[in-house]
Length: 115
Length: 114
Image (cartoon, rainbow over all chains, first blue to last red; front, top):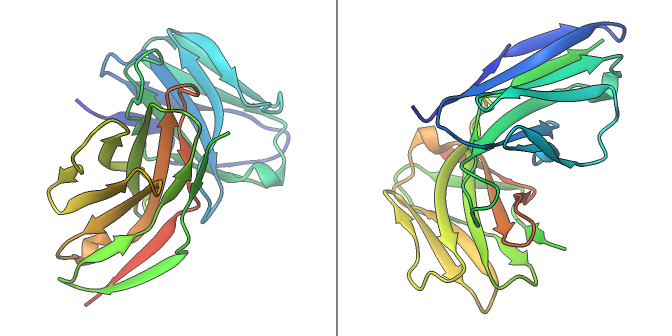
């Protein structure tokens, strides 16, 4: 199983809503990532978890709150988002942050629209 | 700091022809990995090919090959015998040993013409 599964595939939310994006992998990977991607742009790193602990936070606003309940799951909790937060949110995983030059496996993403 | 440059925002190629997508990079690390990902309109980032900085031979994966020229700091992707399904956005990326995270180029939108 070389899949990273993201749900939902599409999400529309208002600026006062609270929602969560979910990501799951069963490859035994110990590093998991959240990326944000605007149309026709490269992905931008948001968060990195290593062994279920937050390792990197790329100065992301607090209205985005990541959570890693176990080694297979990664969530991104959303609250009081702005229309400019509308984007494709990609989850990825890799074997281990300590292994150099690691390949990332990506999910299909959640297309988020904030109204 | 690391930087990846893809100078071709869009490329067109005739079906069954070969195409080269350009990528140059800049890093002070001696050890790094270079990757190419394909992103169809469905959104998923699909890993295509990997080249390590110490690999002496160019990487190949089926119809994909990576033309690695270390002195020029270039890592061009060559797709042979293009297929209609190859139409997608292609990203070059680098994972230097010091940063342990991928830096992406701006991408090249490839369109394969029938």
